[in-house]
Image (cartoon, rainbow, N blue to C red; front, side, top):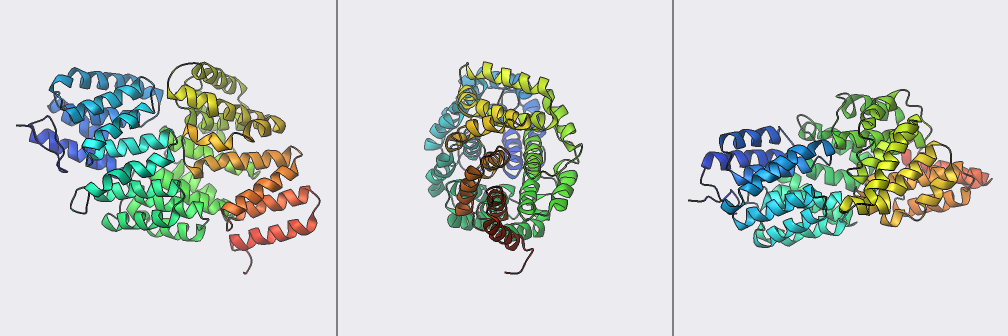
Length: 463
């Protein structure tokens, strides 16, 4: 007799041990702890006919956003498809969603999982993979509303309810509803203090509202809840470094970079892009980071011809532009041009955002600030189309401001700095950029006022 999972959703298996192993692996994925891939591999080895096991494995693999995972993803999807006659309707929906990603239809994956969730609103795997899929394709509306649609079917008695809340919190934050995001994230964390995604959602709220002192205190006070043994911890360390960066505490930023952000020299795409994004922000501030770029550039060099996921490509180009690796930079641009002419979601992402962004960063590295400005000036409103969060894509605005300062367009830099201040009045970096623009315009009085505002927000002078 077929069993239901712990949330009451149907499965096609009658093997209790297999289903228990699936629940364990899913719980590890929900919390970003342990090794869910190893856990589910053990389950599949014991029961190769377990459909949900192959599906969980496929979803874990697609989350890597790396071409290197594609051969194993292909084998896993095909194994699940071979069992489709024994699968139930819910599982067949997951099979179609995993196949869509393998075929390059990244948007199709969350769309197909939404169809699963309509009939199975407590399918936590469909919810989490659909949610992260929304993030990968830059769909902030669905980040919020995918979870909102199913939450009425959940309550505190349903296993994993806190994880559903933390996903909703992140969606609320990306849609600019910071008050609701904070309340929802804290409710999720109250249910499970070690919920790294909920902690991450609140970290985003602090970043977007420039509540940096509060963000620092929160992450540092709760470090034992989100850092040890968590494979999402590098991203939360990155958020902590962002707070220190805006406060002008460069030594602490570099200490975090050399410590938890890059000490393990991770080759995981998310970890690498966080490192590149932090070094690029330091470059924009003319901070000498020494040889730190070289290690990352070597790793990205091996992927220069992939053009598998446009958001990752941007961070590879940061490394090539910062180190003057023209061979790799040109290889990446050529791969992107080829990818942009092909089918699938990444072709659209690359064509509309990824390729012009990489061209802009390449130009910046060569000192061609006019080209950087031309490419980035009108790109920011649609930059969400290649994924990432508002906090991550903010690097494009910062790059544009610095290009304007270096490229003899201080008026543009002033306008963009004012835009930044309107969005984040308490951000020291916005006022610092404004001070640089005023100075370049010869407005000494304006520069003094802006510098003082930046200092106040960094806590360097009294209010």
